[in-house]
Image: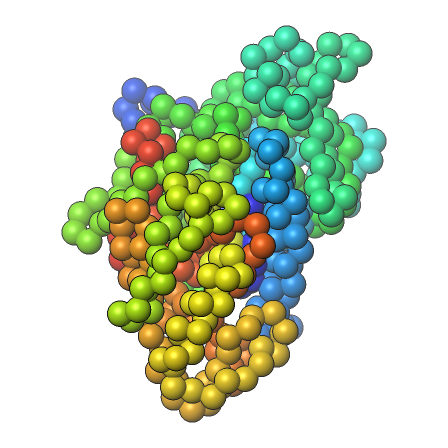
Length: 433
């Protein structure tokens, strides 16, 4: 699972009209990304203020980071899943006829799964559960199938020879069920749907923990072999991209995620860095060399992911950019040296470098130096207003690993090319993209 700290959480909204995609055309399609706290989100609470929503997101994300550090400190390739504190929701359809589900979309896990009837032990869910018997295209997979073997240690064989999966989390949440195949249907912003016959997913019959009753499971968008990205495979040429609208935007414009030819990032201003293949293959590893505060360059000595190549994960579901404590301390000191403002405490007690925003605060420019790609960040990427009178650095420290979060990614068109093994950045007004 990927971590999340704070702020905006996005919802992927997809339609459920069935059709087929022409794989030979390598065509592209796009879907909307809706901020978790926008009026379009099922989580929207009109009684909350913006600062209350931010505080809630901070606490949700802190729980998720704790579970993530347990995952990355092991040598297993296990891809854990997120719980109700997930960062994305996605509407897809499963089966024939199409049955719509709303599930957490997670760039840090692989398996697609949903709660299924009969449910021996399920968490409370608002929507009806998927009934496999109602789908003419559903089938359980056998233990001897190649698809079952793709799950590795997370799979086992039931008494009747059906492939069984079992995932558990550091917060004691878990999901268990049958590994199955059925048609998964996605929609697009153009109205053209994409049907994926015989897609692998988990039919969960025993699920419990800190999941939310508004979601029905998980949609894995990671780099592993059973993720939605991998199952789309040659149909999207291993290409996808997204452009995250700043959380401060008042235009009402949705963010978007693009697949196939729509996911290609090119043109003036594009810089690219290698995507590093590492264990586990679920995560998207990059190489961070340094971060500059103005003209002062601070060398990155690495993380538990490695000291050189693949020392940081890029994750659209994590809000803060997280780095090891020593590097964070040096970075914070360099920023504090140039900021002209009054230091104050974060009222939420989570972020550590904060200033009073009542008086004018001069914020420095930060440049993130990835291998082969210098990404210049604006203040909207590096500082966040946590209350009416306080702005804080949108970076934090983490003991294990390092993560490049979504605040640093806003107003950039960010493209993943899994065939060429690159991640590209293009400064973009995402409200216009």
